[in-house]
Image 1 (tube, rainbow, N blue to C red):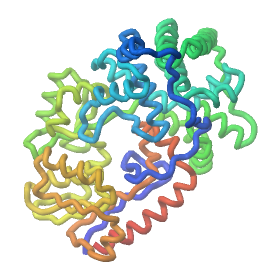
Image 2 (image 1 turned 60 degrees about the vertical axis):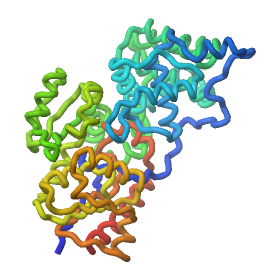
Image 3 (image 1 turned 90 degrees about the vertical axis):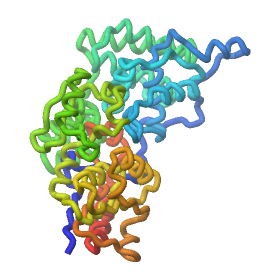
Image 4 (image 1 turned 30 degrees about the horizontal axis):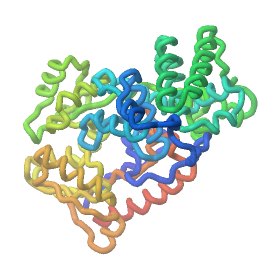
Length: 455
């Protein structure tokens, strides 16, 4: 009988878990998005000469313009919080294209330092969104003012607040650059508003008098305060406090807000050993340490953009893969000649790692409901030179199991889960989950486990 390996969602899931490839309906944010409000308001009397000027603006900070547009796309559901596409290629050119289409002008091209800043600012601003919004509302002294702000203006303020509060950037530079962006992308009045609000924030920070809530009162009041201070949805705070206690819940939220680390897996199927990968990282001066658990893995805390720009991912020499995913594959223990079924395969990290262990003998049947992500899996398999031992099946596992079951020696089911165990890496996910999702996911996992057991 096939060996069924099931990774189900638990309360404080470790980094083993991935978010569902089919995202659930987005939860409403505390601030209503006014879809009728234009993203930017061109000045009146915009003739042809003015349009030519707006096509490129070398005075606007490129990483702030890109960050503001990307943050809008994320909040409106059109992007993820990272700067990697599915193949691991840096997408700076694409980002500047979005800036031009959204704001009506381009800045200078993004340099490596700009890309690193975009990654930091976008991830951090999303992670601390609830906290930042509370501060903005407090300084505005009027929630309605904040709720009726244009989407771009809100993102510019969030960026400025994050840079001052969390990055400790020089106040004068943050104010000057964000005011300039608001004036050029919106209008002079918007720049004046940004100027006044950011200057007030700088004074409050310097005098250590930021308006923060106190953790006091009943359970609900304390949960609301903690949700602001640690920038999490209230329902998550209450859920964790109920099951693991307030002290452990605070530790968990602190971990979620920390800078994530990443792991790289050397692609042994392409003849790349960990020693080869380490040699490459040394030549690129990327700090790293060896995995304590897996022979093909290397950990890095910083330098991901350097790895991307060097082409290590694009050439298939290595993959970005969490060690927890690699440990799952070690439990599967692929052997040459094995027939292995990966039931919810996309985006395919574990599928590719399993295939690399088969030495060209055997087969991995990769089943997933998402056709686009399966296509990317197939393309990556060719790049990693393991496409000869991977067969993709575009279908719902429950339908395959019922109508045309696939048989294998081993079956891996990494069922879609809440993703709450990887909030440090998926900064946007905390705002896209609802309490009701937990029950829906549990039911889906039960159905998928039943289907996998037939294989």
